[in-house]
Image 1 (cartoon, one colour):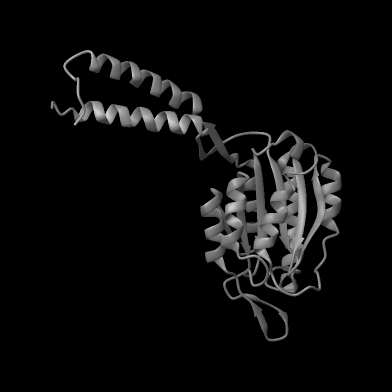
Image 2 (cartoon, helix red, strand yellow; image 1 turned 60 degrees about the vertical axis):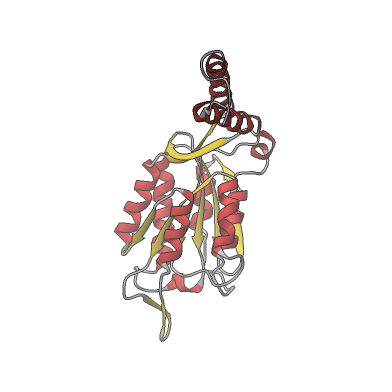
Length: 263
């Protein structure tokens, strides 16, 4: 029997292309885009009262978030605050006046803990309610997570990542706090968990920023406002189908030449 490994390879490739085409294979990657929706996730735990930012981390965060809204120009923005519990302060809206009013009213919450995993899921759901749920929109959705602590209650951050990826949500994270940390209660110092924030951004295609002072925090928000990175999907059904058809023609030509049998 004449062994023809080339023909076998072609047939296997055709089979793989057709299977992937029928299954609606899609590739996801990070690229540039316009018309973004933003979810601002702002830590409102007691540690945000720490005094390493003047007058406090919370005041600096609110001032920087307001600057972000002014810089963004036009977009739909939602606002979520979190401690051990997540609070939806503003659902997605293009009325930036309402967004700024909500940000100005954010206060430290008395609930203990920091539930970053839960917050990422709740923040993602901002994008998929109302008309977005009906239209099935899953593009140009960006979460901006600002925190000074570490996730210690609620859903594990690693368990939240698949939900973000399934819904095509990109996360930029901002760690706020000086190297030395700041006191918010006598003899209690808040420290930042940068490893977790780096993990979140790496997995979702976003960027991690470290803010060591108020001016740096403002600059970071301004940079994010002009950053046009998003998660992009490309459906490969048609390209794979075309490749499969072309290879079928190639196989037909080979079978009518000297290649007449498989190994």
